[in-house]
Length: 107
Image (tube, rainbow, N blue to C red; front, top):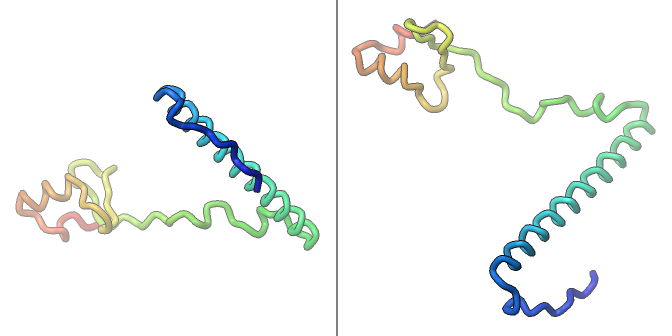
């Protein structure tokens, strides 16, 4: 690792410090992007040696959560559905406040 020059940060104006911060953030992102590209190229090469493409081995979207099937539907607007998990939509809250039960909204 190379030595950083001794910078007297107190000699910089606020605008110069903010610009330096932006420049450093961009340099870090660029560095990360280069390392990711190098890693991808190495993985593609290794997959190719084994007779595969990297896409054959890594299913696109495999790390994303699957959308759960809807269990409830808004009777006033059938395009609005809810799986029963996560935050309760306003239309469900309104229906419950109006005296309906979840079984009334079930699909």
